[in-house]
Image 1 (cartoon, rainbow, N blue to C red):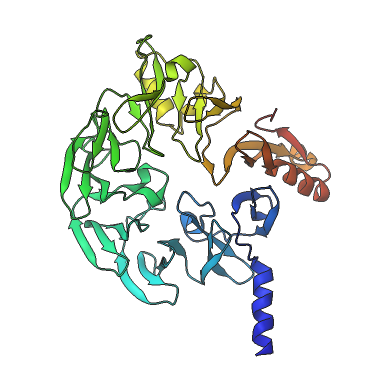
Image 2: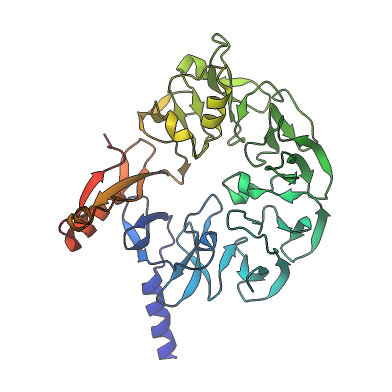
Length: 430
């Protein structure tokens, strides 16, 4: 009995039991987690190089659970955003809920289990399984959407199939897996983007198509369903497939959060340029971005929203507008003419323009990621290009930097590689 207690205590100290909000950072020597004050509360844990990249996801991505691997015990661990360790396995894991997890059985087969290993559902994702697609659903309101070669299914946490239909759950379209299914609706796809046959439809959890199908050429969903609506250009569709007062007239619209949605449309006074506005569920403009000079905006979180005052995009330049507002990874970096700040729900400026990219607050902090490059004398002698890696910066709701992984990296590099030096910091924090 005494030996068991000692082992439990060692494990607790090894992994850290903090029961406080934690935030993920990447450091040169592995993955670490900080608290709201910027203190490292879980030391760097080196991740495996093999396995599915998203199976090793160490960011919370809006669902409150991260997966990371630890070389010390060769297991994958579930960590909550509150710093609690839920489950560990020698097999690759994908979060499903706070009581369920997807565990890999073979190259393409996964099973849904609880933390005691009891199996509820098994799915073969097929040979076309891609690490860029999250076909294993996260449970929202007790339901999840899973996708295989035959189409999509809605299942309960006990593995019961609620509905089946040929539309695929194209979860690669957006970022927050916890919001794929909201208020009983989600977006499915049919066809192929490369063959110009891609179609979208809004479906209910009983398999009924409530809106669509619509060609990708004229309708493109921007984000997941949220607060009972999903943006299907040029407006929002509700759980009944209807377009309400907020149903049309927008070039671009983000998903609803905290009762508001950020939309992009031609200025009411300057119709030749695009501006950002915030509307409520009745389609009423709550924050007039044209008056504030807002030309881009993001959804609210923690009562604040990231906005930009970059020069407005002419409505005649549709290509540039699409690249910017869709965050095209191949071209959006060409249009960083302005910096990002934050406003509250009254339209009051809270954080002055100073950051290079948009950000989203989560439990009081917001993460900004940008690259920096470095080199060493030996690399220069061998004519090797500088190496580039990510810099993690967390700010509080006043815009104050509470943590910057760049400082930690400098300390670690200079202590081991004396000739290490920064080539480009990526961004200078004022």
